[in-house]
Amino acid sequence: MAQTKITEIRELTTDELTSRLRDLKQEALNLRLQQATGQLENTSRRTLVRKEAARVQTILAQRRLQG
Image (cartoon, rainbow, N blue to C red; front, side):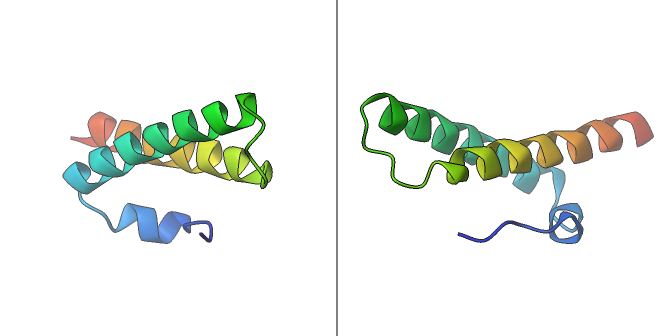
């Protein structure tokens, strides 16, 4: 899965962003479990998921401050 661009994230509604954040956190948990059990092949995926979750959280925080 390719990295989502910030412009694509900004186009999403607040509800979609909240749902996306929940999905990313769940994926991060699954990746951590896979790494702990030695099943994770693409370790860089953990970093990408963590950074994308941070981007979504940043956009949500900006929207809370604006409105």
